[in-house]
Amino acid sequence: MARFLRNYTPNRELDYKDVFIVPQYSEITSRKEVDTSVCLEQGINLDVPIISANMSSVTEEDMCLSMHSGGGIGAMHRFMSIEENVKKYSLVKQHKGECFISLGINEESKERAKALYEAGARYFCIDIAHGHSLNMKNMIHWLRQTFGNDLIIMAGNVATYNATKSLYDWGANIIKVGIGPGSVCLTKNQTAVTFPQFSAVMECALYANQKNIPIVADGGLTEYGDVCRALAAGASAVMSGKFFAGCADTPGTLSPAGTKPYFGMASNRAMKLIKREEDMATPEGKEIEVQSTSVLARDIIKELKGAIQSSMSYSNSRNLSEYRENVIFGIR
Image 1 (cartoon, rainbow, N blue to C red):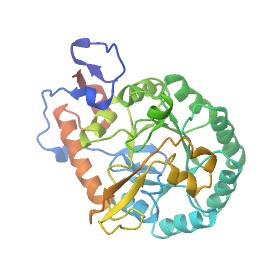
Image 2: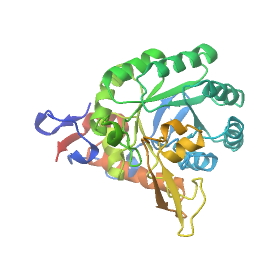
Image 3: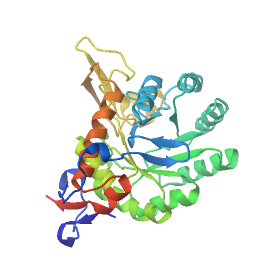
């Protein structure tokens, strides 16, 4: 586990911006010596531990293919018809790509899971705002009863030790961490419910490390250094929408000003997509416009890989396991 400078024990919960990585003596002469690869689960081998967020303004088939070609993986959103979802997944599969398929916790998501399983999908992401809940427990149990161990389940979101343990006990393979840290998430503003993301990752990693469970740090990333902080704190991978929102691979129509919409999945716009008008009175997400560029997701991944390699070299770490052991954090 990561250590703090001078064995200091934080007396408060921390966000990424609250911490820094202390430079140390290193025998690494080139960042080319540094390996950023990770095996999340059997069959999910990533050259760079990055997942594009399962948001309708970020990840559809083009993003999944670009993420795959860059050494990461995409998580396709679920805010579309089942038929369209199967079609888009089949296009990814046709081009020998791989991706996670997103599910909710209702009856429609069970039908979605059956259709996508028939189409060949085996990596599923149950994605709800409050993952430590009876609804999540029931959905994981249903997936296991229906498909057995013939699939990999990433489940979330959670932010505590006990929640990580529960999701693992219920049958999840990968735990997604993050309650309210995202730039277009308003959960913390509307409900006061949140957990500072750096501390949430460390908290969940306390249990995950005991069982060798991968955790994915989802949201709150504002700069590439935050990815390094998350990985050093115990995450096996990170998930981001912000880094990819302006890429050419994202869905959405360009405005006359050359922007695309980027919105949280509990925003009014998202609720309209799935016809949940009852949740529109108090949205927990917002919509912004981001400048669209010609940059592809795989270009972002290349930059991220370089940043991670450099950070690891400052802590004399040749792989992510060494990085988590070697890093010393300071508190601003």
